[in-house]
Length: 247
Image 1 (tube, rainbow, N blue to C red):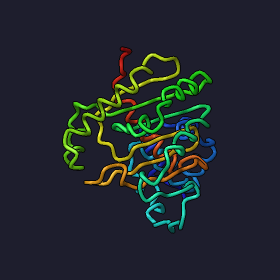
Image 2: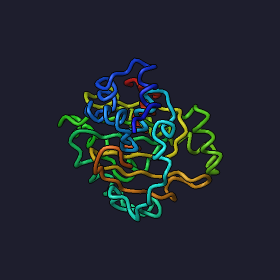
Image 3: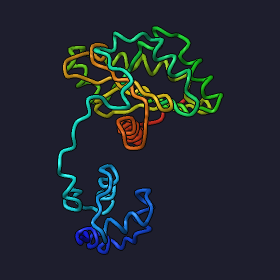
Image 4: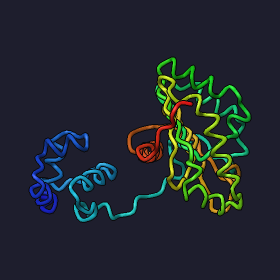
């Protein structure tokens, strides 16, 4: 049965099968089948297409309202730690050492890395020298979100001081080819440590310092999974962040 709602949405926006297919990275014949045969795309693809068309995804594809059975374990979940304090710093270091293309770090401060591994800057320089793109986003100590986090964690101005300390640690990397350092003022829902297709994601819990909150180790297994959700979140924050000047 044809999907007339999708047909109308595409016509209203002047979208051809080929143009929409290019945007959502599928074959034009797939889009044609969505329209003429009423086929339902994968959830992630459908959500992207609906966003592009400015439509509600469930209005275009009502079948997606049906709940999908929960998986006992995500195929991308390598390990789950009760709290960050349970993870030896060598786990972070080994993961970063293995990176060949991307290193992304999104935190407020995370000075524990420099404190436990003083060679961190040298490691990041080495990775950049080998062609790895390194992006470091740390919290702006003057932002209201950082200050609010300090109040919520009963850490007072301590978190602001640690953000300034993190900036002191990372500033020597500003201007190093292949490395970018920025400060961000966003609400930090998770700290993200990404190395190529692996990531350590430190959840944040209201009233709990990051070292006492859970961490999941992810390995990307395909497009649109948990890993990509956090990678996209990093990119979104990065776009809002302010470059740190050399000095």
